[in-house]
Amino acid sequence: MISDATLSRFAREVGKYPADQKQSAVMACLAIVQQEQGHISEAAEADIAAYLGMPQIAVHEVTTFYNMYNQHPVGKYKLNVCTNLPCLLRDGGKALEYLEKKLGIAMGGTTADGLFTLQQCECLGACADAPVMLVNDRSMCSFMSDDKLDQLVDSLRTAEGQA
Amino acid sequence: MKADQVLSQFQAAGLETCFHGRHIDPQIYAGLDGSNWGLDAYVKRGGYQALRTMLGADGGAAWTQDQVIATVKESGLRGRGGAGFPTGLKWSFMPRQFPGQKYLVCNSDEGEPGTCKDRDILMYNPHSVIEGMAIAAYAMGISVGYNYIHGEIFQVYERFEAALEEARAAGYLGERLLGSEFSFQLHAHHGFGAYICGEETALLESLEGKKGQPRFKPPFPASFGLYGKPTTINNTETFAAVPWIIRNGGAAYLACGKPNNGGTKIFSVSGDVELPGNYEVPMGTPFAKLLELAGGVRKGRQLKAVIPGGSSSPVLPASIMMECTLDYDSISKAGSMLGSGAVIVLDDSRCMVESLKRLSYFYMHESCGQCTPCREGTGWLWRLVDRIHRGEGRQADMDVLDDVAANIMGRTICALGDAAAMPVRAMLKHFRHEFEAMIPKTNPRTSASA
Image (cartoon, rainbow over the protein chains, first blue to last red):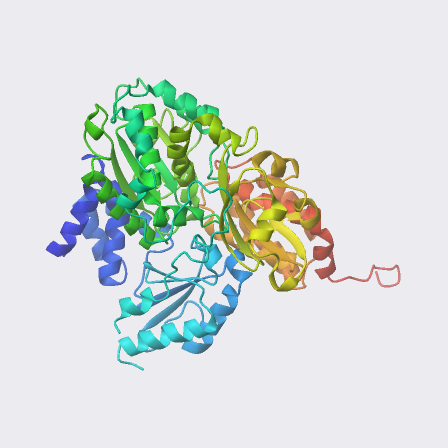
């Protein structure tokens, strides 16, 4: 079930589009659910489909087409490191390797404590800030040298009481 | 410290990419410092004056729609998203007398590798886009607009939403703008990770809440666009250029560029330079000057090659690039494209096979799967380049690469296929020897060994 607080966030998105085009809000509704629940479950897709008056499979098509929707549960912090060419030229690939070593997981994996998921990703649109990394879809982290990667991971661990 | 506070420490502040003071005669980035993105500061910089003048809000006659379009045509403004289509001409295609709803869409789905200019416009000067869109909407008789913003730059999306609230509260958006008969509603929409949605018809599909798969053209968006209604789509930087043009006149804009290439252009310089960043310079500025603004090639190395207009544009060797000026015509003549203005610099330590391998992986990953030549061909290209890079290539591979690329070009619904093929063909054209050098030499068979 969707909470009233979430429904009011949905309603704000739906209000941007013509009354007979509520489906336009599906991407925003899915992003809201992901922010609140961490991933997109089948149940959430069904709820959104019912809310927007569209087939559930059409919601699922959107979930599976766009790279940023988590189709499965991920760690509390999803770290997406860009390794596309402009970043690769400025150590984007090395940043990913550094995090693999630091977190003790391979790209695509999640740490045993469930805190971090590490992923390679395509262009984030912040090429002049390389190396760049997106945390939980909403926080762009720029100029991520090894020192800053240490600082980020260690600070998040401290914030979660797991230092 | 809470997690949100931790993450905010790593957010870029624009000092390196936008407020470095190394632009040349900037228009869009002029006077920005990161704290003055809001409406009051924008108005102090002369913002919304163009809209006021056009609507006759400060006395004087309101401009006619034809007058606005003629001014934009005269300016020589061409689409800043990559295609370089003349903006005024595009606006004139819109069926202004169409009786139903029409839409205006801003393409801020900035995902062409190398490009990060629109991000800084939306983050640090969002009202320039809002004003430009309002002017465009007036010229084409449109009452509703959407700005589709790249999903990965969520903080920028939130900034633009905040600017929209300011503009609505001040009467620059909404019903009967500044007491005129003209109404315009504008909303922000975010993507969620799909390069293909930068293609305008895929963007429209995405805006309708579907998978972002491109549509056949024709019909073009001007006749069948968002929700099947006439729609005009322009890039963020294109809209941001419009207020200056209306304030200063089309001729003045054209004069600060070069003929057929009006105005300034923002170049995103990435890769092997000392100072990566966005640089706004007049069209026609020599490439060598841009390289100098960006601090030159990193660590004193030599320039090897430049991908001048985003990852899809054909690579150019240093000797050709150093002779180019930064405008549509010069770079096109050199065999590449100005594209989105994303200048990716490679120094003499770089392996071109590895560079192409990474780009080919990207196009394979981002092909929407709709057209067979692109869906299958992009994977084929990547596997071939990967094989060569691993030292397992065969002598015939370069011909196969060229053949696969040639069979993708022009055979797909949208330009992603071409975008995947062009870098391959250009790399083979200019750096074939590097590919050859990675392919193991096999002993020719003799009659004795046969």
